[in-house]
Amino acid sequence: MTEIDIYGFQTKHQIRDVKQYNARIEKWREMIKNWDKVSPDFVKKRVRKGVPEGMRLLVWPILANVNQIKAQAKVNLQRESYQQFLKEKNYEFEHQIHLDVNRTFPENQNFQDFMPCTQSLVNVLKALSIACPELGYCQGMNFLTASLIITTNDESAFWILYSLMTRYDQKEKYINPVKLNENFYILDRLMYRYLPEMRLICIRNNIDMFYFCTEWFLTLFSSILPINIFYRVFEIYLVEGEKTLYRCALSLLNYKKNRFMKLQSFEEQLQHLRRLDDMIDIDENQFINEMLTKYTFSRTFLEQCSTEYKNKKQ
Image (cartoon, rainbow, N blue to C red; front, top):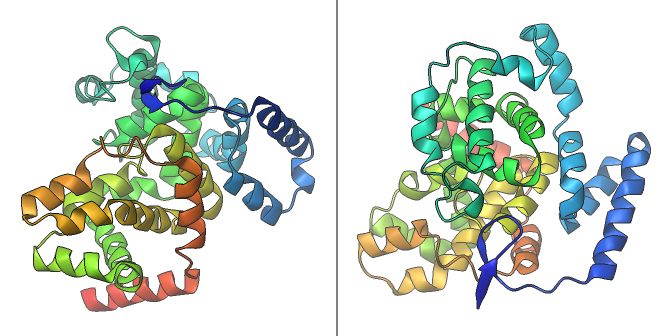
C-alpha cells in the first residue's frame, strides 16, 4: 500500500519512532548552538545518521557554508540577498525555465499547476541564472532545485544551489558535460573492483555510462532516488564531497544488478538502469549503510584514477 509522504511523493507507509525522533532533534539543536566547538569528525558521524527533517532548514546552510558564500557574493556580485537577484527586468532563460518547471516531478502534488512550489522553482532558477551568468540555466537543475525547495525555503535553496555551483564545482559539469567523462572513468574503475560482472555486460552490450549516469551526476541523484534517500545522500555529500556520489552510484547499480543480469537486450537493460518506478521499495537505512560500509575506497584511489584519465586524454 502506498500513500503520499510529507514531501508530496508516493511512498510506502513508514512508522516513525516519535520519541527517538524528538531526541535526535534535540541533539541537533544543541550541536547547532555550539557549532564552532564541534569537531569535523563528529559532524560527519552525525550527518551519516541523518539530519532530522525538522532541522534541515537550519543545518543544510551551515553544511554548505552559506554565510561564507554570501560574503563572497557581496564582493563578487555586489548582491548579498536573494531578493536582489529577483529585481532584474529581463531573464534570458525564463522561457526555458518555465518549460522545464512543467516537467519537474509531475507526480508530486507540490508541483502541480499554480501551486506555490511551482512559482518558487521558477524564481530560484531565475535568480541563479543571474548569480551564475556563464551558466544561465541548464536542464537538470530543475530537479535539484525542486528537491531543495520542498524541504527548505526559496532563499535557502538559492544559496545552497549557489554554493553547489561554486564551492562544489557543480557549475562546470553543467557548462561542459564532457567533464563528466572523468566521473564515468572513475566509476568504471570502481565497478571493475566492486561490480565486475555487471561492468562486463555493460561493455559487451555497449551500454555507455553517458546514457544513464549523466543525469545521476548532474542532478546529484535527485531525479532518480526516492526523495528521503536523496536527502540523506545529499547531506552526506555536503560534508564528504564527491566521494559520496561514487558510493551512491555503486549502491544504486548494485540495487538494480539482479534484474539487470537477467535482461538480454540493450534496450531492456538501459531502460532498467534509467527507470524510477522500482525505487519506491528501497529501504532508506539499508541503502545508506551499504553505501557507507560496502564501498570503501580512499581519496588517494580517486586521485589516481583521475590522473590516469587525464594522462590517457593527452
